[in-house]
Image (cartoon, rainbow, N blue to C red; front, side):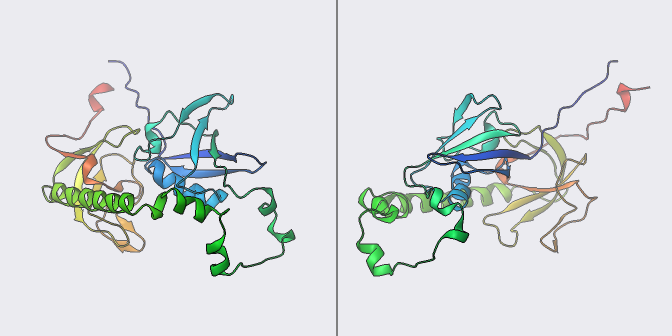
Length: 245
């Protein structure tokens, strides 16, 4: 029989970050498993743009627009994305050139009362237009959706048990098979997670995360995934021994 080839993509991607209206540029590494909303949060810290008002565009190495990342709930890895592509941050409120070299800037902290009275700040814009955390209805809806999603994850996770065979299907990544070793909470993480011992070294660790051991397996064979991406069933270990002599 012919050889069997398997293409495995990295869980991370390196992107060049640029912003509108200035010469700011840097390279950063991101997990493909984060949502666009989470990516915007990281860009807020990185560029000074507001996550509530920014828009993101993805360009290939030839500077051709690949996609506008306008679905906050989508995973970064669900887009056609590759290393060294350019992530362009657009926001008219972005902090520009005067902050690129802070060593030359005299530091001044504006009193909170004076800042709150000004009408030309990002905060005042968000308040006037009821965006981000200043939209109480939206924030309440987001919190309700977050709680509901966690509850659904927990209910799904309760159907799993250690020893179950499973197949993991994370968007933008190849399917992986393994055995469930842990179901429950992780320190510092919301919701429940499923600890999996993969059949192949396609994981991230050995079952120990942040100094706590949840299960034991060889290094790079272990991973924790959301219950949503786990399917339990008759998934025997893939064996390619019959493909070679």
